[in-house]
Image (tube, rainbow, N blue to C red):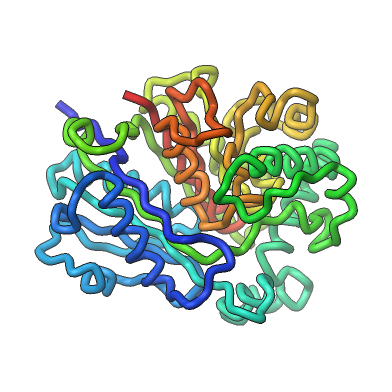
Length: 385
């Protein structure tokens, strides 16, 4: 019989413009908090999966920082924004195989430095492009902003998607963020505010783009049977999938039109024996408003090319909307810890612990992680027990 797995602990360091800690220190805080949240001791862990962003890095030395010995599983992963969901997938498979019983997965980053702007922080962490990438950079394609702007423009030209459509996503997610005490940005915005925000890389305004944050988030994964005996309501890992289109820098006919969500989403739902209309809450990776739009479109919430009008329709998004998306404010308004942002909010919602912003029905939650320029995608289906 297949072992069912669950998320039993959630730990979060302080997140945002927090200085004086390395990524490894943030990770250590998050793991300790996740273990305590589950009602366990550090010595109960027999597995550790680590990952970091573009800052100083979290490596296997975290085992020593935590004082962990005789682990059955220890590895580092990098799937960019899809990493967090992938870590949960691999931890679940390790538990199902009997390789380990209780695994902490952690992601942390520290790109922000005092007296240094967010954009400069990420530029300083990235290496200068060489070869063909260098030629592309010389032509203006030099950052995630420009690559995603190119993808968004392709979608606009093909399907008529507009900035008003993208702005509706930014406004709705800010509405959720006003109810999230962890959110960095809690002041409500209007569509007029969106259009008034400065251009970053057309068609993206500032309010189309995610935050940059310091901090760490960790989860504890174990068997569902064991999770039922622990401190928190278990969040069962019902289904998962990932896909990696592998088309970075390659001319192809669907760049900006289709993402990995088109394959990953349906596969995860099949594994979870769940239909799309049974999903109560959706937490999607939203490094840009466009990323959220194409992910929801590819998951099948609307027909291909209709994502803009569908999501901008009054009554669709936001706390009072029919589609509960990025209920903590997402990476656009809450905090940006890569795929741990949607995943942490998914755990909070599934547990029923979101306070003012809690969605009444939260039995099935769909979570996405996106990496590269729509190059990597991982999906989870989580549920109550």
